[in-house]
Image 1 (cartoon, one colour):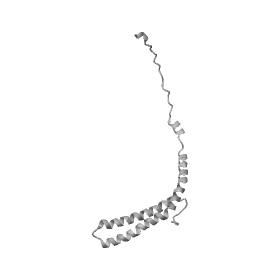
Image 2 (spheres, one colour):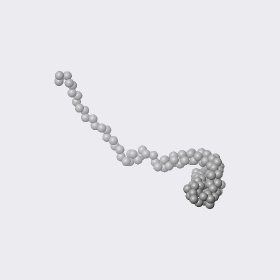
Image 3 (cartoon, helix red, strand yellow):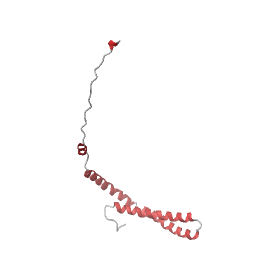
Image 4 (tube, rainbow, N blue to C red):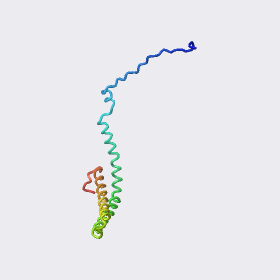
Length: 123
C-alpha cells in the first residue's frame, strides 16, 4: 500500500516583504489642507439651503413660541398669586414659558450663526 502514496516536496514559500515606512504612508494620505478645503466647500453648499429653509420657517416657529411663552408667563403670574398651595402647577407654567422663550431665542441664534451675511441687526 505504501507504493501508491506519492510524496510531494514541501516548497518553501516566502511571503513578500512589505516595505512600509511612515514616509510612504504619509505620502499617500491626503494633505490636511485638502481635507479642510473639502469640508469648507461642503459647508458652503449645505449652509445656504439650511439657512433658507430655517429662515422661511422662522415666522411660524417664533409665532408658536411666543403664542406659548407669553400666555404661560401671564398664567404663571396668576397661578403664583391664586394657587400658592400648588407649587408644581405654578412652576410647570413657568417652565413651559421659559422653555418656549429659550427655543425662540436659540432658533434666532442658530439663524444668525449660519447666515451667509451679517444678520445681527435684521432679526
